[in-house]
Length: 250
Length: 279
Image (cartoon, rainbow over all chains, first blue to last red; front, side):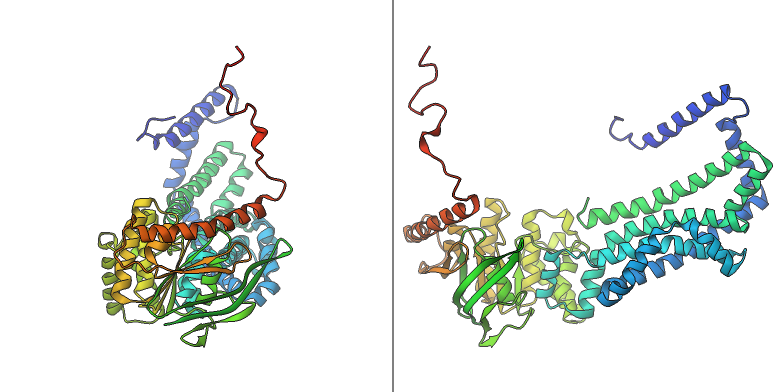
């Protein structure tokens, strides 16, 4: 255990150990690049305008896709949770949507939208909206009975009950759905770009693999992992923690 | 407002069987009266509160409030629950404003009235705190303010202080009495604590074990403020405890079954023997 006040060092230590181990293996395995070489390449890439365009392209698609996922996921989940008939008819559809991995949507996306940016965004939406619909729906139907009773004795019914009681009660579930949806969307983005060759990080992966440059490939994967971890850790993990504390769940 | 519960019966489906919770319950709470419902755990006290609140419907019988049958929940009959049941996403102020917001009161008026009732329960310093930052007693104060702010004619309290420590409970009991004397709502207070019931109520209804029936009504004719050691109060407690004792035994017998008994001669060593007597 790290002493109190120094726990923030644990990820730093973990990274240092990983880098150390990697460096040692690089010394003994031929043609296996070490961390210094890969990080250097990554930095060099980031300075290249062509690479920057790919990076920003990916981030733009992810952002557009994610906004659509939020609208469809939360909106769909609210409708499903609110109207039992819709839930009975379309609920299993949402679960099925959630069961199909994002990458499996790519061929259909290409068939409909061609090798375009739209196809990639479509992949993100279909790959990530399902989980958010399912989580929002679950949150809506999971109002604690005591909270529900208290609200009803104070006169809350109908639309007011829904907006002032049901929706806020569902927020912890919605936030964890948002977190998962981001992770699913990020995977779908990579798969989409890889197969459609729309300029982006996924397409870069493909291009680099064709050149046979292992060090470049590792640099790219390192960046993809870093972005995934950073967004999850800096935004979603914190948000989830804040919500769990306030809702009395942590 | 007068509460008139007439011939109420209620059963629930439970593990595939039917559980009879209340059988032919009759009780009356006059307008402005403070009445306690006292009974062993699981006797259906809370169900009576839910029925009067309109959260559930009786299988038989009617609940009349001011002569009119109860059709559903209404902010003129507010419940304070044992677990406070605050909205965790709202601050103290937000919680107390909740009912007023539902009633579409303008924001400025809403705030003013909420702050007044938060002051009444001595939580002015915690207006912007959230429930997870409050102690059990403070949460219960918020729950009381949240109910009182609606100026209900009837206040239903379902074991509101049962989860609190003795000191906090005593303080809140006194404050509840003060508030009651100020606004004089009709109060129905559920408890399993005999001292609490006799200390607070004008009359105490003693409920029998499952199925819940009215076992007895005890008017507590001791003037307020009451002192815990008042012999008249102790006499009431003694009488009620006698009635309750039988009921508690019934509950234990039902919950533990006939196979469980505590024969006296089953001690590994007879109690009159002292350790080491055979050395």
